[in-house]
Image 1 (cartoon, rainbow, N blue to C red):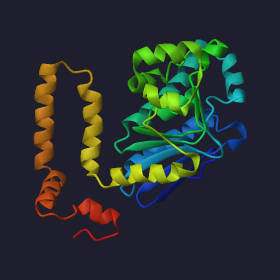
Image 2: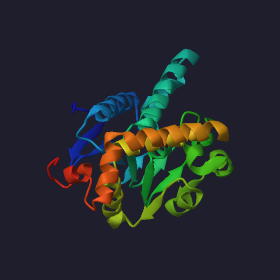
Image 3: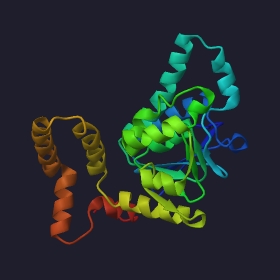
Image 4: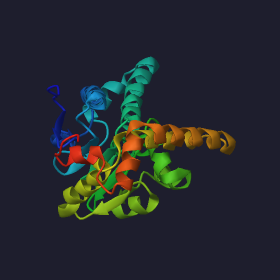
Length: 269
């Protein structure tokens, strides 16, 4: 993995951890961090040794949104320059969301503005009880535009009307109730909880997880009749795939499938 200046990337036991590493500014992002996230996630996408990607922040913050110095530059941008910059933010969110591998956000503190978007783009979000989450853009006359698809997918339009318009700083408990996060853990139990979630993902078939992610995105917008034929085709293809055959055979033979043997450090068999 490349040497980065705003993030750290480590891989252990098939799990990649991407750490936003600008604690002096609460891990706020700038154009350099956006470029480095794009590069890192593209490489992790293609890395056969990585099964799950965890995103977190260094220190006591997850991500405080856009860096103030970065925002100073955008004040003088033309419309076209603003459009190009905004598309880069959208590219990062989309890449995390559509990664062919499961993604987990370990929210250890503040997730504000674009930071809440980075959080929401992940498949599973586990937050510390001390986390604070806010879509605060309206407080400075802006809107949570690029991140809105991922936040709305999580919490729904009704809840989003409340916190998009108010800019409220929510505690993790309320964010959980609204569906923005999947679960909340005590600060000293956050790593253990995230580890349990990652363990459940690692125990599942990697191709099945990839297809599940596609299924979730595709079926949401389909008319029922189209979904009927699409989903029947998907499960038929999965059943005859190498992974599907191995998984069903292992279940019938009451043994672990080969992908679990690999994650346990065993041989391919």
